[in-house]
Image (cartoon, rainbow, N blue to C red; front, top):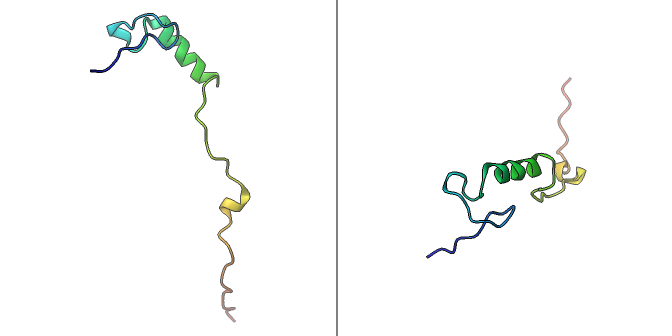
Length: 63
């Protein structure tokens, strides 16, 4: 049996129409947090070395 948690914004019980949020206002607040960058998913930082394919074989010169 899963444990029910409250709204991730205000901790009140979730409403069936807006699960996991208690209201449309809290759902909109959560969306705004994502859109303004308050929430972020960590990503691997790429460097130029990641794009370097390494040494390439010499191509024959066509004459």
